[in-house]
Length: 239
Image (cartoon, rainbow, N blue to C red):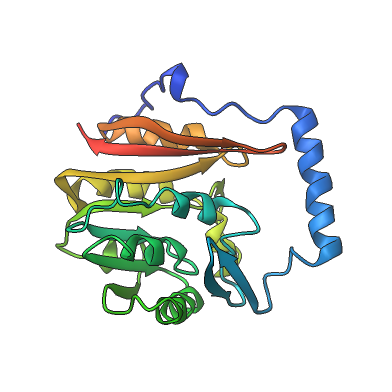
């Protein structure tokens, strides 16, 4: 890997949200507080595309920030083949693992947060896909030594910095972009690909620079614009 970041094509940049959008975003955050949607230290039952998901304390909610729900919505039979092996990295509540398991032959769901591992295990049972999903605790690819996958899913922590606790790991990391990019090619099968969701709330350009430095092919699969945020799903392949 080069010591200097490779330039990211302009077509793949995620522009930072303009000032008005950021102000609206702050107003919406206060609105969440007023109705209780900012609470991450209690139990919540969410429904995503008709499927139930229990969200436990300290576990990333896939619906309130919208990211997990958006990535899961891309997991249809065209994206996930019936013979496909899937790795859901940073599984959180297990939402992407569950939706991938509706089509795939096998899914491994990994999270570093012990509460997320327990939560994902419960949701796998709630959605009756326990025969296809293996939930493991671990830090990135350390949980899958020597294994390779057709599809890797990742909704990473967007913010850079040291996390304060397990809950904060879903939002913040000092080196996850570098380590994920460096290890991805070794875990992908030759024809495999990864889907990574990035947001205007984080430093998306830094992630993209790491992907290019690692020699990965990068393209845009889907994008969704909100008043205060843009979410983009990038498709990564071995070059």
